[in-house]
Length: 238
Image 1 (cartoon, rainbow, N blue to C red):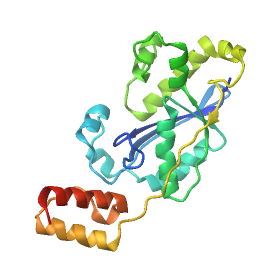
Image 2 (image 1 turned 90 degrees about the vertical axis):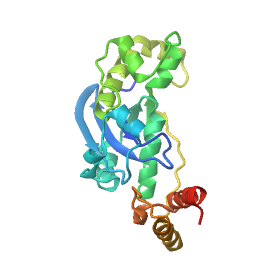
Image 3 (image 1 turned 60 degrees about the vertical axis):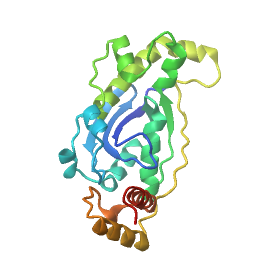
Image 4 (image 1 turned 135 degrees about the vertical axis):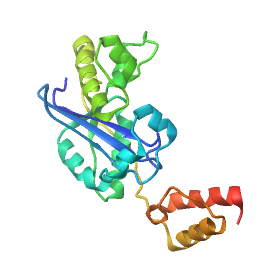
């Protein structure tokens, strides 16, 4: 069993770490089964939020406007998790977003992790859903879904209850225990900035078609700029 770890939960603009961004981070650090630190922050993604994310999280663009960017908060997050395994419900999701952000900032982020979703899938197959809200209802854990710190707190309680119910059985089975950290693997490639020709083309297209855009051309990556150009050309032509 593992009684020291950092539980991390993120809210993001979408599900793809290659193209989506972090908008909220919640962290609970547990040492010898005791919560020693909690931390949360909003993160400005430098893009408008999709309506479905606003509805899901209750976070709005105006709340993020004055929030720090990922470059300001990431070093502190990496320091807070240094030397600890990560705990999460579908932990690879959260890890992949942090790893992508770290790679973009030329920082290293290699961690081991424990996944409460994998544990629940193995030991609670009879449940209709093993989502975090469903498991919290099953165990009577108070939970306000889709806000990062509340989700992290709920995941810590869920891990404790799963360990209480199934930890000894898992250990008795021998082999690799889901209650112990395993290496997290996600290959992230660093984004490259928008190129000068892309910027020039975008500015010309926006001006030519009198478009009102909700993004900053100067802050786009090369792949984002390419997608924006393709969309404009497909809809408006040259």
